[in-house]
Image (cartoon, rainbow, N blue to C red; front, side, top):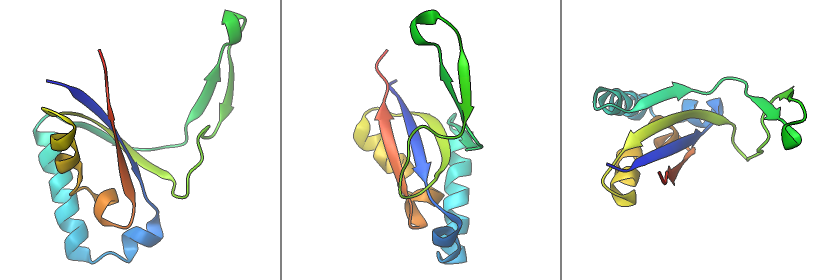
Length: 108
């Protein structure tokens, strides 16, 4: 079955202005995705890694990409196609709490 990486973006302000019942259903939805085999996690501070031409590794703390909202988390999900992947993530906290979720198909 095809794999998809999802990136959730959201902030505390959007999360807190979302009705508590909606948030609770979204967290329950995440738990059902996990029970179905999705690998999910909350984003921590990233590290950028560079090794130009294999000449030596350097690292910088913090994100390389910038967006309106901070990255909140990631998931690796299986779905039959992009439409199913979108349906699966449409009930997650970032999608319902004034954030956004990107769905990236992975080619093997």
